[in-house]
Length: 113
Length: 120
Image 1 (cartoon, rainbow over the protein chains, first blue to last red):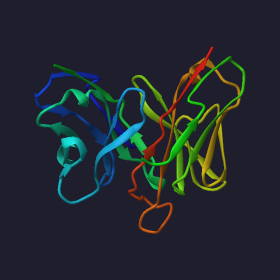
Image 2: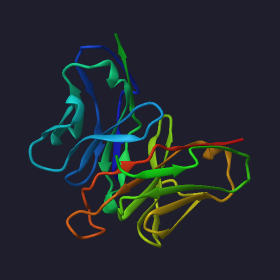
Image 3: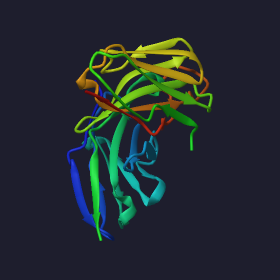
């Protein structure tokens, strides 16, 4: 069965520092992978997605993610974090038909000034 | 923003009472979903719908039922609420792409703002 692991529950970075959020997935075939962000009290917003092709995908708000099949990973990165990036981030894998998504437990990002 | 409205946004109820959450969309999307969000678990799929009157169970469906009598509305019912169903519930919508519903389409999910349910 498909599954997603986000090893880091909480991460704190300083504003302007680089960021990498880890995501590992378990899937038998070529996965469709997603990163979503959730600001406090809000729903989830899609940051980026990987379907095929170039393994480095660009998303909104300056985020990017790299798909590494050999490591079953899809890590999210940002070169310079802004205070407004403080949120919870969810990695997800396509769970079969009807666009069902399987989500990881999330990583909560705090940004220090 | 996708036109998704969840109601109520907040509800407090007592154990054993029935509760219905409503999700209304104005996007005419084919697929609709109910997820629950709990700390340490991320989002878990309760039920989903792939068309009017077509629904199926997700990974945490026990104690929940759904109905979809119109494209725009997807109702989640807790038949007899329990404290373990205290959670934040999210509705999401998606559309099939490639013209073939049901296959591993790659459409993204759009989420509502959530409904916080507390069962005392």
